[in-house]
Amino acid sequence: MKNNLKVQRAIKNITQAELANLIQVSRQTINTIESGKYVPSTVLALKIAKIFVKPVEEIFELEEMDFS
Image (cartoon, rainbow, N blue to C red; front, side, top):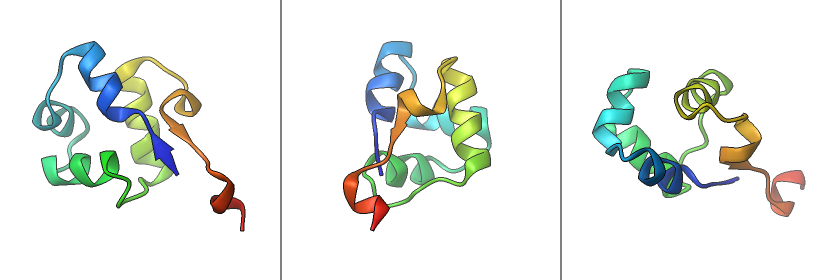
C-alpha cells in the first residue's frame, strides 16, 4: 500500500509529531506509515483522513501486489 501522507502534511503544514498528537499515536508510527513500513489499521486510516478532510482513498492507495 502506498500513501501520500507526507504530501498531505506539507499541504496542511503540520509535523509528524503534531499529526501523531492529533490522532494519539507516536511520531514513530507516523514515520513508519509514511515510509511504507507499516500499514495502518482501518481506524487509524480513518482518523488520518478526518484530520486532512479527505477520503481515505485520497491518502492511501492499494498497489497491484496488495491483491496477490
